[in-house]
Length: 81
Image (cartoon, rainbow, N blue to C red; front, side, top):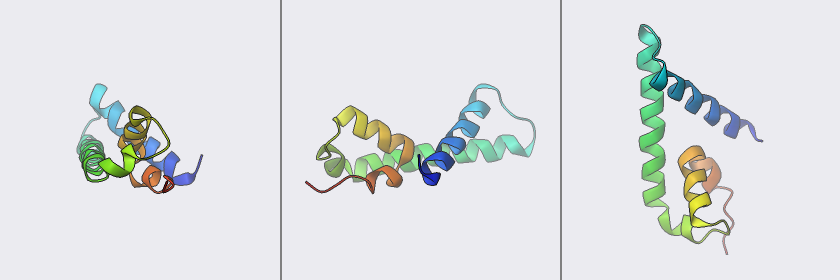
């Protein structure tokens, strides 16, 4: 796994932990901001790059899931067919 993938997973985990077991103080706001920023950004990427995702070699479910989790890091790995 590449460093950008690991960093993205750590940020998702930080936000998800906060979602289910909220942190105290300012950490709550930082974790919430990270989680919702990642969520909105990756959903927008799924919408903008829909055709590229559908034309990838992966199944649409896998491709959209990977884009939702990793964003442009995954999109950069899609080869043109």
